[in-house]
Image 1 (cartoon, rainbow, N blue to C red):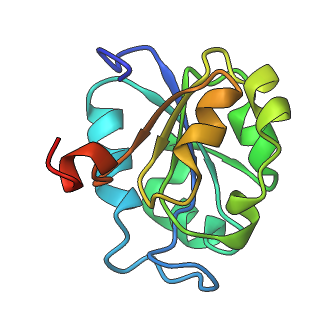
Image 2: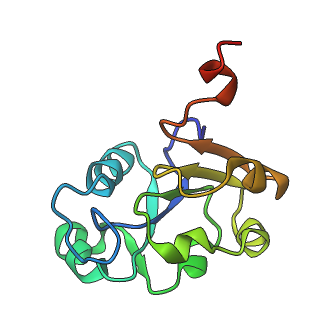
Length: 137
């Protein structure tokens, strides 16, 4: 969805392995960040509770933000990696204005694809099955 990540800025919302914790063990965000860094991407990260733990792992290799919208500002794409309730309620209009490109990758299928696309985003929900495939058409 983003092409070659080299030189691109990716905002990643959610670092903990699940919502309502600061636990980073088994977090899908960690290998995603490592992979993107290895390919030359810049990471802007937000998590309501896990920023301190992430900083112990990544140090100065990524940027940390207390505010999800600040993390998204200027990013070429935004990924959601933890199902925090706050991410379900993101102001999509505001988010679209802040991103350099309206690309949203929903790793937790947290958002309604049709609604996100109505706001003009290029959207992908990872692992989401297209309804027509379920019905056999």
